[in-house]
Length: 371
Image (cartoon, rainbow, N blue to C red; front, side, top):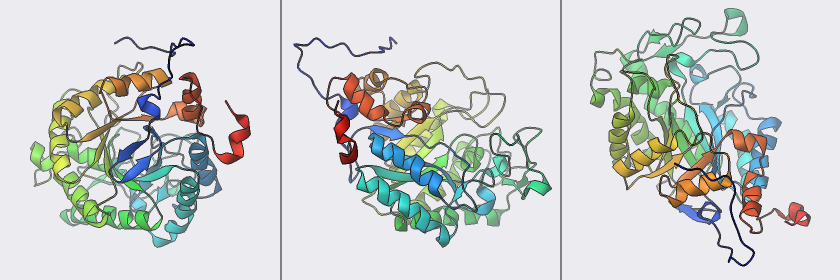
């Protein structure tokens, strides 16, 4: 499709607020716009605890005008961390520091959610900038569990196949983290079933070689995700939205694919999921991804068509306001999530307003900047 890069206005044209910047509802949440901050791991926590970095980092998106901020992958158990520096919600002591962040976001007009995650076979690894692959014992490595004893790659940890008891305990771990998220003041939670982490590992036949009720058929491979969704939905307030992030395809032949994602989406709607956050890849290093602007939008569009009752969020090299607006105008997705674009410019939503020729909504301390 043709991707416009700049809006075209004549001075005599009436200025209409674009869909991207209009107020919108996500279940009971009143959002100022349809721009979400995509979850992006920062690897700056200590013992799972948020700190000043997280307050400033996420606070900048609230000041910058994002409608919904989604915190990075936050582990539901210590062994579920990707690295020793991941955020966590496995302990009540982790609630308070996250509450400072949610309070700040709310004071400045943003809604805020947290992504609940378990890394599975991609756990116990170095954070970026300090190495690649498995941690050594000297660096604090821990035992890694997964659906099957299949490592992500030769330099990643060798996982142990999960026991039936460990699988049965997983939904409760996600539910307990969701209860803590509510106490911390989050407006939504997102269950992370993408990017090659534990729940995605169960979904894909490339990482799931089990022969019991959690492996083999499509119905068996999706079983744990459905159990996690049910457990979280049971404790998460009914009036608040529940999100699930999936990888629409593994980008590897014989893996999880768009057809299975569409069927899963239809089922998730009946389990109380409100928004499906559609990404792709991350499960297998053999993936061949054709990266270009909006390269993941067609996946979101296909899933939206297959499950029209389920709202869909899209992500992936969405750089300009006009690209984001096109996605919404053409009905390819209901919400647009940005990652790198917001890292480069946390005030991207306000810049978008200027590019569309309308006055941006500014926090009072910044009002003197005008437009």
